Amino acid sequence: MGRSAGCTPGGAVAATWGFPASGWVLRHCRPEVSRWPTSADAVSAGVHNRVVHSRFDTRTAIVLPGTGSDARFAADAFSAAFDGVGLTTIAVEPDPADVVQSYLSALDDAADRHGRIVVAGISLGAAVAVRWAADHASNTTALALALPAWTGDPTGSPAALSAEFTARSLREHGLDAVTAAMAASSPPWLARTLRRSWAAQWPALPDALDQAARYRSLEPDELARIELPAIVVGAVDDAVHPIEVARQWARALPNCELRTVTLDDIGRDPGCLGRAAVDGLDGRSTHPPSC
Image (cartoon, rainbow, N blue to C red):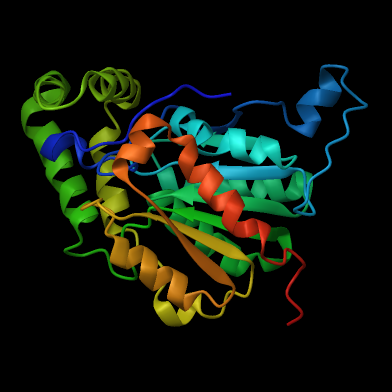
């Protein structure tokens, strides 16, 4: 399904983005289908008889990208693995004018259209996903949370500091100069990706980064009240998304497992995030909580 792309660090500027020690950018405020159309799209296209057999009591998974990231990376990370268990992946293309609200709107819309959904997210997307699921347990069949960046208050966390630095640099030096600096210190694949995505998100990119750096994630006691089946995927060598944060989330969520990957794994194939998530969720109950 997806391209093969990497997620190794790309220098101080690239280290902002919401994939391992970096991320990718966003474009428009609407969910995008990474592989198959939504049920509504299928009907409008005359596709009425497709039957998907999913082991997750739903046919639909929503994936939220990380800070500055885009739907393409989210789809690369999750769609092939979700496809393998009968899920249609809708990777959300964020609105840089209000990333968080665009994610919440996409989740609300998906729940209205599809009922129960698998909710997945990367970095900032994971934080928004788990908060939404806490408020919409009856609409959530499972959680797949990759590379969480902080717990609770983001102040002083590596990802928040990096986002603030990049936003400041963009305002002071402009898109072209910061893009050139990024490209000079990044692998070619990352430079190509960020050149495209930064240009697409400009000029709202600095504000999007600042919003992400202020976003409060759930505290451990709030995570502990979420009884949904969950998987947390952490990268053991990612300084921007510390593995200890992933461990903290996995310890706090009562029906959760932790799976780990490395940056090299993601660099060879970002789909390793989705495979780790599906493998972990496979052994967990996806029935609604009894409480």
